Length: 466
Image (cartoon, rainbow, N blue to C red):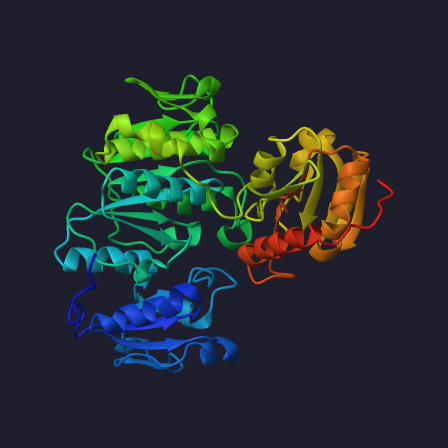
């Protein structure tokens, strides 16, 4: 792994809009490769936080798009529709390429002469676990690996890999709608359920954005598509008609090409691993993640014989069903990454009786779809902006709940509630975004861990259990 050549993009000019994690990394990487960069963020705080920039980069309003070759736009900033940022809308109107950092990474890798391969992973849920798991399987197999994108390091902060290296990128719909030349050797779409509809307009627009992950794939590539929803079925059929090899993956469905009925992961060649021995891959949803990661690893050349051991020692993803500690027989589980109802369903399905901590900024549809799991909830402790709306849904189904407003308050009474109501676990699986009270789901999860650790020395208050 090495740095990109310092003159790789000499003579090229970029505008970068948005100076968050992706944007700042883009500015620094582009300048380090010799490009001229003008960068801007509408937030005074964000601009001030950037600090000193390398030669060739400056922070200034993006006033003249005619002087740049492309606009690199942070994922959260829309470039189409009524909510489009003015600069982004002007770029679209002028026919200027509007690109994601993943697109620039792909171009830079190829411009540097590296034939490193790209594995791209998306889906409404499970993409982070699958990304980290695939990187783990490939590293165990001896490949040079760089993983990031929507999860972890920004795409343009990743190093230049040699020809036998693999970039494993988690890709959001926001990133995918800004691709141009990007070509994934193996691309995976795990599932599609309603999400980000405010950005994409409707489910068809959301599915179309996700389908960009398969752009430029051909007969020498592999498309992995989840089995079980109509949108994925349509995309899989379109890919097959285009001549792209397609494998369907699932958690337990025997009809899938790769799945794990009865926890036994297998494909057309036979057994791969017993997932019952993989502590971090509990549940049917994680079986689907394991099926996708194993299929991708095999396609990329990982030895089949090594997969079982690598799956077994996988440590799991931070803030995704991670057991923080067990106190007096009650397990405290951090699933802060569950930012929508479908993700929370995957955690709720793993426990028989729980104290559920949920709330924040609810997605469209709220938690109504979780009704099949409500009998597992001994008590729900609701936090955040949309706690009252969640309370209405729970009340309509006769689920015991209490609006406690903050995570601190929820954790403070969770242990005694679990003891009183004989719940096996306290589960933070919010089913909501975190930005009303936290910087990110990671921030929310870390605060949960701090609060749980504090319970060891601080007695919890009595609970009425209602």
